[in-house]
Structures are given as C-alpha cells and as structure tokens.
Image (cartoon, rainbow, N blue to C red):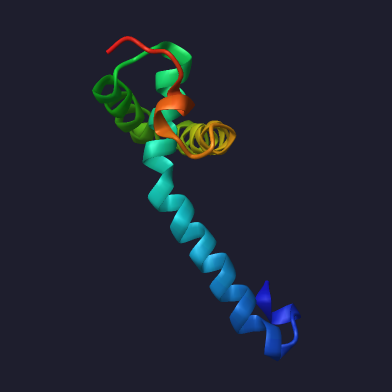
Length: 92
C-alpha cells in the first residue's frame, strides 16, 4: 500500500499509521469497558470480564471489540476525556 506513495512520504505516513494503531490498541480495553459500563450499567470489573469474554470469540469478537472501542472513544471524547462522565450513572 505504501509503495504507491512517493519515497519521501512513505516513512512519515507509515509512522503515523503505526502510532495510530498503537494508540488505539492501548486505549481499546478501557474504551470497551466504558461502552459496556454505559450500555449495561455494569461495574468496572464485570465490564472488564465482559471485554475479555468478547475478545475470546474468534471472528465476530474482533469486530465487536473494535466496535466497542470506537464507541467507547466516542463517549470518552464527548465527555471531555473524563472517565466518570463518560460512563454515566452506573451501579457499583
């Protein structure tokens, strides 16, 4: 894919994409936990177990995990990057 770019742009574009995927992978678990806490009013440890169980499903789990993390990042950004406001009112 990057071979179609001019040689001077390959390294910056590759580094940008690599760091973006790295940041997404670091934030995927907390963002998925935020989504499950908000949707199902779970405590943090139950949501963490739920994310673990979803990640064990071979193919559908990958897409669900990716979708949950994107939705969780949306909630987090909408709450001004405040975890307590992002999860909303939940039962602990």
